[in-house]
Amino acid sequence: MHFLPENIDNYVVRHSQQEPKILQELSKETWQKVLNPRMLSGAFQGRILSMISKLVQPKTVLEIGTYTGYSALCFAEGLHPEGKIITIDKNEELETLQNKYFEKSGYRNQIEQFVGDATQIIPKLNTTFDLVFIDADKSNYINYFHLIIDKINPEGIILSDNVLWSGKVVEKLDPKDTDTKVLLEYNNLLNADNRIETVLLPIRDGLTVSRVI
Image (cartoon, rainbow, N blue to C red; front, side, top):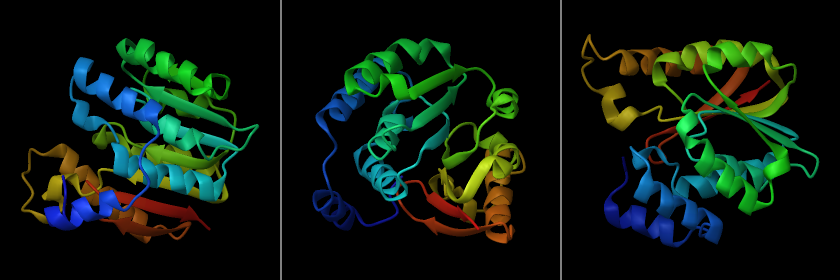
């Protein structure tokens, strides 16, 4: 979903850093072999994730929603030399593709994968995080927030993807549309919680940056 006029969006992309070759390859293979390839972060948003990681230089990253590993590799670009990424996804069928590119990237030893229900896995993680990326099932966004907020280090960053949900957040709500309902509540939660400061960016399908105070 693009909210900018196409010519402006194209200009923005042309004047932003291009994705590394390995991510071009991963993107191509995802579109060729995986269902719902639109779930991929994509080149432009990937450069934003990479830039944020490079600014934060996190020692610990938690990613909720691995998909084919594209965004994890973007975060790895700014990871502290001794840093670690923990990434969670419920789809075990994607592990082979993830591992293929994690190995090629040189970050294999710094990425730990979990397969299963993130709401069950997160409480068992005995660590705190400098950067958290929430990009999984929208119906659980509020649950994920409550599970991770006390595991984030001071001045740590929470990134939340798809928070504009193809513009549905400003349309009349369909009572049967659970995802949009939860996202509306989630966006209000981020804006009101006094433990964080938040800015919602109209990038692609909406990306919220929240900083723990």
